Amino acid sequence: MFSSALISRLCTVIGVQLRYSFRLYPSAGQRTALARAFGCARVVYNDALRARETARSEGLPFPKTGKLSKQLITEAKKTPERAWLGEVSAVILQQSLRDLDSAYKNFFDGLKGKRPRMGAPRYKSRKDTRQAVRFTANARWSITPGGKLRLPKIGDVKVKWSRSLPSVPSTVTVVKDSAGRYFASFVVTGPAETLPEATPEIGIDLGLTHFAVLSDGTKIDSPRFLRRAEKRLKKAQRALSRKEKGSKNRDRARHKVARAHAQVADARREFHHQLSTRLIRENQAVAVEDLAVKGLARTRLAKSVHDAGWSAFVAMLEYKAARYGRTFVRVGRFEPTSQVCSACGMQDGPKPLHVRVWTCRACGAVLDRDTNAAVNVAKAAGLAVSAHGAQVRPGPVPAQRGEAGTHPTPQPSTAR
Image (cartoon, rainbow, N blue to C red; front, top):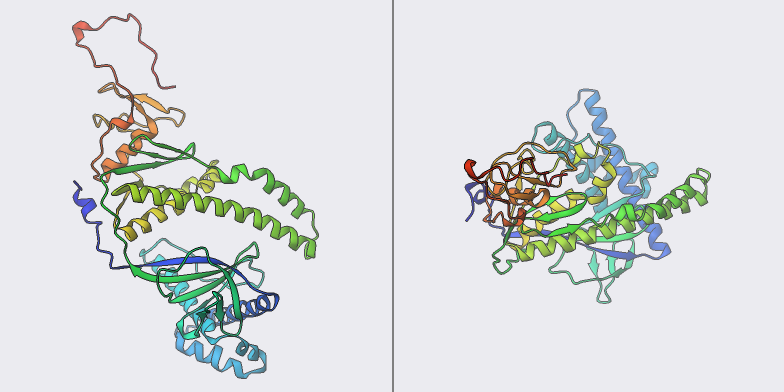
């Protein structure tokens, strides 16, 4: 049923980490306390980064987190310049140092080829529109019987609960986004949920005209959330450009632009969640082609590529497959899925993007470009699929040489 490449990807998932996000509605005083917490965490992060960069430039040993914690938090609180660090929970300051450790680890792992390359850690600015602090169990945060989130040195914050948490969360991260909204992001760990076994196995071809084309012939239109909101966004951005820099009117206009972009992002994320959940529930195995999104984002199609959000959608498919016991496979981006006939396997060469339907020169099958690619994605992943979905209509059976010659002139091709 599966190829050896597919079987090697199967693993037993003992538990999965999930993140649940809920909207917060802090009072005016709580917003001030959160702003103080954001600022203190940012200052400790920048102080630690500065200490390490100074040590590197002077050829000194790399300062360890324990030493930085004692120097930049414990001892700094006793000085007049950093006494205000004692006004916030010490846990969020410790977590800020751990965030810096993670940033350095990701940077060095990228240099070693263990993960995609990323830049070195950078200083955080108080003008950053997104701020976050993290509380672990050591901070003794809790959820009150009334359903509020009790945070140390901040208070009981009102939460809009859209669903219940499946287990006791280990950490909570309070986030303020660019639109000025507050969220509580909980991390919970629980056993993997195994869905009833399903028969279908599909390949998915992602695109722009159709967001996704399945190997069974189903085509899902692209919502184009950003394109549909462009008129409203342009109006808000023009209003922002006319405001004087540093003024309160400009700050209000910036929030209006950020809220418009947040609405687009929320709609796109909801679409991705609904589609990925449906595909995982209905199919036992899902295969997707590994697209070069960064390369496509440097072309004239950049806005449409970012509007589609392929990477976020594929990431959702991957973690939901692990969570529900399904099989997920990425097919290499250099696999010629658009050039191979899914009926007979002949490679017919590259074709311009405007060619949406083509006829196989070997078997005569008339193929839809996208559906044919989806079938080839499934076959490359070793899934048990049939190629009938890629065929637009039955192709003519090539006649014997002695029977040919009914038409004195060549017939026009269906590809146009």
